[in-house]
Image (tube, rainbow, N blue to C red; front, top):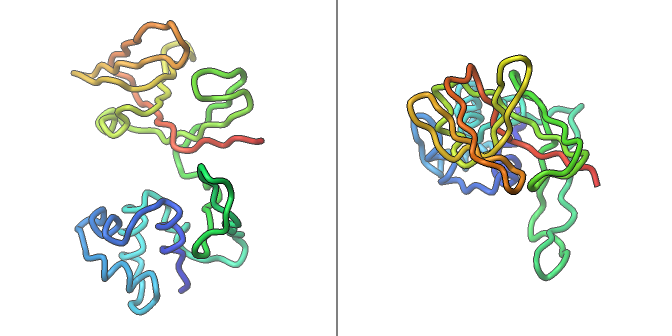
Length: 187
């Protein structure tokens, strides 16, 4: 089985040690390196552990003939565009189960008209992982709130709206919330 573990790890800008520490239970950087290079066989259990550590679906770690990778042609920084030091690929967006999307119809905060935000639903117990991230929260009668999660206490969420001059909002006991994970912007 040919894996894309190294490509995904590099695309997420993680070191071997970062991935090893995120595994449950933790492992060594050397083990992750061996799994990446194929000197150690990748079992389904290892594939699932590494996928969880990289916060991707296990299927994204397997090279498939019908999936096209996008080659990194250049790196852009304050000095301009230049050739990458080593080959790399980026991972095309992949929808995971339970994801929801937000389409931006007019610019607000850092978002522009036409942007798509891909959000992952979180159970109320997992909302601590979304601190200081943009969050979509359902309200009664088909309404929603969207803002930066700045506080959480006793089932109440404190959201800061993205628009200027708006006041903090407090939502009590939402059934779920969705944290923004990917921004898809067409140029």
